[in-house]
Length: 200
Image (cartoon, rainbow, N blue to C red; front, side, top):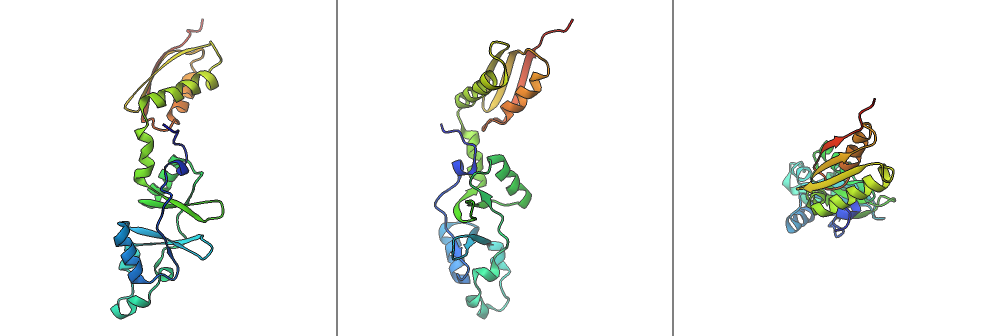
C-alpha cells in the first residue's frame, strides 16, 4: 500500500465547485445533487475565493422574492480555509479541528482548486496494513536512527499499535525512537519495553 503522507495522497481529485455568479437556487440544487454540505467558490482564474455552505444559505435575505438575485459571491464565507496538496495529513486534521470543518478545498501553489479533502479521507491512513507500518518503522529505526549493529530492536504492530522491545545503546535513544515511530502514518500508539546498558 502506498505511504499516505500528504493531503495529495488521500484527497478527492474530482470536486464540484461554483463560480461567484452562481445563483442561490443553483447552489441549493448542486448541494442536493452531490450530497455535500458546502462548495468552494472560484474566481475566473480558478482560485478559491470563498466557500458557500448550507449555513450560509440559511442566512439568505429574508424576502423570498430576492433569493433568485442572490449569488455565491454574496453568500460565501471568505476568505476560504484551504489546505495545500503538499500539506501533511496531521496538519490538515488540525486545521479541520480548529475550524470545526468537515471538508477542506485543496489548492496548488497558485491557490487554484485541485481537489477536496474530508475527515473520512484523512482517516484512510489508519487503514494501512500493520505489516506496512511495521516495515516502515523497522527501516526508519534501524537504518536512519540507530548506528548499524549497535542495537537490537523488535517491532510488532497490531491494529495500528506499535510494540517496540529489545536493547538500545543509550537510554536517551528511547524517546527519539518512540517519537519517530509515532510519526509513521497509521500509527495509533507506541508502547515500549527496552533494556538499556547499566552504567557503572
